[in-house]
Length: 446
Image (cartoon, rainbow, N blue to C red):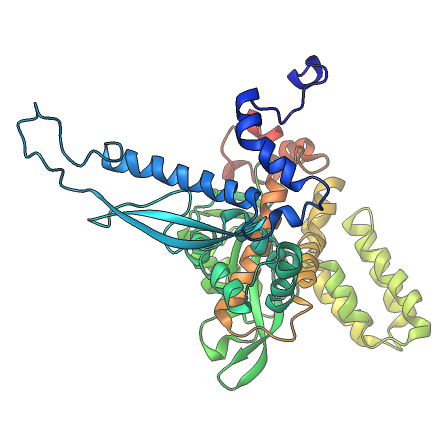
């Protein structure tokens, strides 16, 4: 039983009787009969108490920094060195700190050599870390800087600005850069690549710009965001296989030595770009992207029937059954839609590996739905913005969103469904490319 339940009638916020009578009772008497919001107005005793506690913490930090208590500028008489200390206190600097209870006026101690670095309230810090984290959380959730400015003012009574929100997010640039360039595992069994297109303002105006990102299932059976990139040059606004090749080279430099199965859409040249860096990789085209491309020219009345005929191909239990379904597709639709029959005739050999996998592994790799789900979460954040102001702010915002998604995925208690079966199957297909104990360590199932 917890301490709170064992002690009947005792408040969880109880102090010693002396503190309650001397310090808290006068504040409570003044606040009695008033809303709590009035007790947190400027100059109220409760705010003064909060400010005083911060000042006392700063004073303790200053004492630890100097190594002697206040009012002891002179060394003890038995000390043979110089009697006066080298560094001493040098008054205070006033500061208004914005907190979740409103603005609090405090005094920050100084030393003569200006070497004191306070931790409770850092230099040049005017907003508490709690408020900073809440502002960043609002930013990640999709609120614009103007919305955050209005929300913070309504919730906390703090006077902020859109520029302040931008500065707070910019403080994370170094941290986000380190996250995007963190070392990777040597082998990822299934990797998904995709590009989102976002309106970004450039020197010549707003233009749809590709944002490349790479996700993968790691050894623990969890989806991990392993790469986020945007081309720096004007020519790189559109998705291209050439830039994807640069991304694969970058992934290799970060420690990714082998990709077993690469899942992607039908971008021309992407398969060749991947195999230039990872020659043994099995390329798995997204079946749903192929289906959408096929039905783009089909009329509304016939679309359902055409989709059913195509589904009989990719949902067939074996490659031979898929070939038989392709023959039926040609017999039924070649007269009206010869392009569809030609497309699936050319692409069926590219899908051949899919029928060698078990149902769980096949379900994992035959579409890029896993990365499309991440795209939807990103678009929930960016949809309120007509356009992004520049490349840097775009990369910053999407990095924050993807890092948050990645953190949630890594903190999941369980791996993907039937991951143990997939781990046991992968050595059958790629045995010589996996470490002997891959996937069977204890951490893989936590």
